[in-house]
Image 1 (cartoon, rainbow, N blue to C red):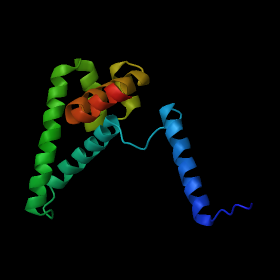
Image 2: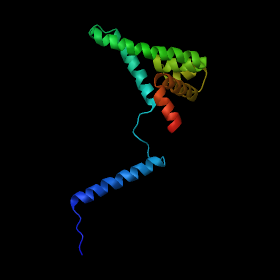
Image 3: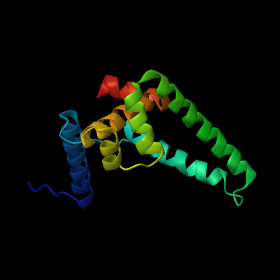
Image 4: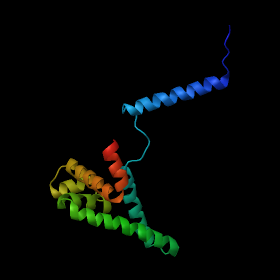
Length: 146
């Protein structure tokens, strides 16, 4: 008896096998998902915050867009203020000077007598804590399920 396999059956088998392999790799943490993390989203929010501040002073931007930008900027600014009240002063200071004011890591390290890695660590820790304020649902999911 001869069994014939048609092209559709082969394609379905390939797709099912690929899906099973990908799921197994994810399960064993050998393959990361493409899901954006709260930390990455927060870094992007900080970039958008800076752009929003620039756009608010632009006369060519329509008023409705400026209103939406102002609401967005206010929410990020409020989270940054809450962050300032909850983390050590030096960590916030290094975070603020680097992320918000745009000072280079090397300059901050030299100016304040700390290692460059200290500035990077302060930035990352502050950004992680800010992500808990800006995106608490994502942050908690990552803590519980990662």
